[in-house]
Length: 225
Picture 1: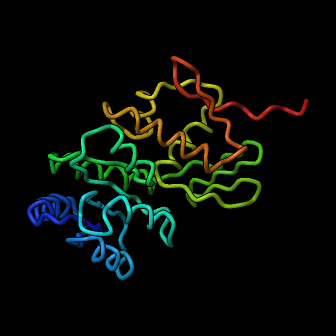
Picture 2 (picture 1 turned 135 degrees about the vertical axis):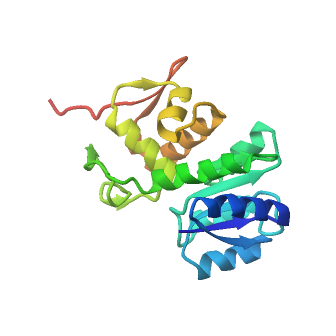
Picture 3 (picture 1 turned 60 degrees about the vertical axis):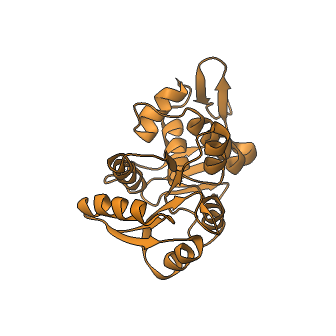
């Protein structure tokens, strides 16, 4: 399986490559956004690790381009040296599935890569879920609203499936991080941004309610009777 690692620091690329290769992955290295764009076009890349601050296009620009292009469902992890919450939120709003803040543990990144890949391709998908006009098909990793396909990132898909399978239940953001992302700890704004993006993509058909002081819940489709 081929992973793209795009970072202008050759030391970072080498260390990340060694750790990912230990896990049996093939790594393509790029030093800037232009080379990364070419790699995405020419190689069968299954996940991209993008440095936010690499030469143009930077990681956030490239993330946006991927989401708007031919590979909208490609898993993306951002590497960022920016510690402020608003900068992390910017990356998530651009469509990143995950992010790791520099300096980071290469093994932690490798574990994040494995987690994203595992959730992007579940071994034994459950059956389809239908709720009103929304249809979710785990085997195809597809979602449709009133018959029209809705493009979701892997994490958005995972979050929507989880909520659809637990209608009416309220989940705190920390619990969603643990059960959807597989993180025992992390930035709770990750959940907030993904909920915001899901609401926007599902439009008027979304029923993700904010339960103040508790978390989020999927409101059941009202019955006709």
